Length: 59
Image (cartoon, one colour):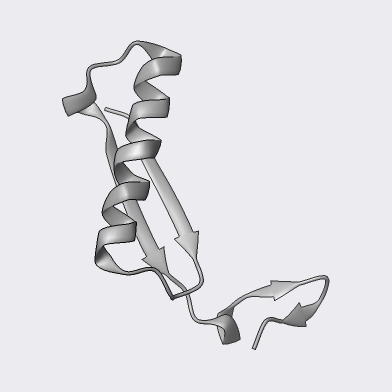
């Protein structure tokens, strides 16, 4: 069972998250030929204060 994990800053609606999950699943199935029902996707919202880019926090 493949598990795809996405970490992102907050801001997407539940509907947008559902679209992302479907699109990522479709892309994985297309690339690997795996059964769609075997692909798991998790999304985690991480506050900007917990992200850093180039040594600087996002928030």
